[in-house]
Length: 461
Ligand SMILES: Cc1cc2nc3c(=O)[nH]c(=O)nc-3n(C[C@H](O)[C@H](O)[C@H](O)COP(=O)(O)OP(=O)(O)OC[C@H]3O[C@@H](n4cnc5c(N)ncnc54)[C@H](O)[C@@H]3O)c2cc1C
Image (cartoon, rainbow, N blue to C red; front, side):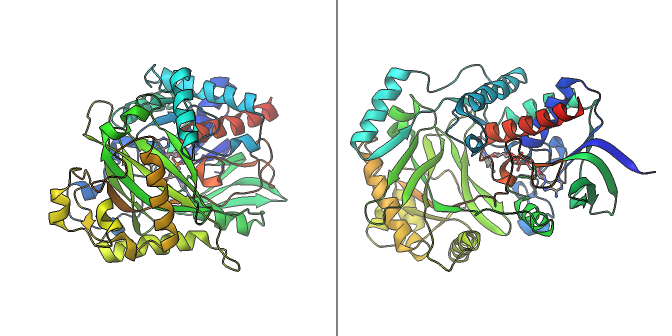
């Protein structure tokens, strides 16, 4: 018998989950299928935790794929400012976007996100913003709700319990092809050869599925925009050094324009009292960080990332990012760790030098080495310039004991041409979340799912 749904959603990350939730809340009796190539949350166990196995042994990564998507074991920082975490402001005015952020934030709270937020003391935020401005930095004020890595799985389970009886959820099913007829979507095909028909399809494959989405877009003849890449290091410092900032704004977003190269350099993903983790992205190890709500280390970590334009005719920023990450993996057997003082003095870090340092690394298997063998001069100069600027608002940042882990690479997805409802040039085919390049974080990914769902609800009314 022909399998048919009103709506098929591909990907059970925040974008896909919030699209499903919105349609279930509307209670229109829509027949919805949510297809996810990963596993359910309790089965998402990374084998590298207990055994010495290579990530290459997992065909689907349990850390990035499955119920909750890449955000399931994330720090769960909900960025409540419209200027952070995505490009949705391209598709709507500021007021509408802020309303949608508040709406999705309330849903997160309904399922267990804590009530308190950071960054609400406007007076102190403005003081910090002025101090930053005097030192060549732009501080983007933002309000953050911190779920915490330990609370995320429980929250996701509670959402699933609400969806379970109203949405068909298929795990370990990989969608391979989007089916289109006469410029209109008609369904999807999965790896096991099943064809499932649907009146509407929402693709929410995340960064993990962004290359697949790009291939699909090309084969459907859709227009694609550029996909940038940001490269840098993760910095680890005593939490006390950043306390004057993190006590006011949980995640201070600082932007700096480097003097020598005039590149945009920024802080990203600040984890007060957190720890550094490795991330395996399509065959390469990169660095990331998170923090727990109930367990604190003595350190704060964050990324310093450089965005730059490459010289023509080169137009493959992703390849460049992967090349740099591979180089770090080659030289460090994974992640390279260096003390700032060693980098400044032009020498490698060693186990002995790291052990003598005042900041104790939270990522134990990073290998002491020399980042100047990995990162081009332009990146090193940009990062060192920004570190000196931050030191003026957070004294102690430019200490020789500051730890740098390399490399951190943010691959942003190739953006598709979408209308204001996030519909593609193919009728009834929507793309949402990080995979479509419209978001870069939990809240805007969730909002994008709501936008597509609302448009579908309008049309079936
Ligand atoms: C370590 C880490 C920490 C982070 N911390 C934060 C944070 O604190 N705050 C924040 O705002 N953001 C954070 N992020 C980013 C955040 O997780 C993402 O922005 C968000 O998850 C994107 O949601 P999404 O639904 O678009 O995609 P994803 O969450 O990536 O979900 C996509 C899902 O689609 C599935 N899929 C892909 N292709 C297919 C296919 N062909 N067939 C079937 N299924 C498919 C994948 O398995 C995946 O489960 C973090 C990310 C990581 C990796």
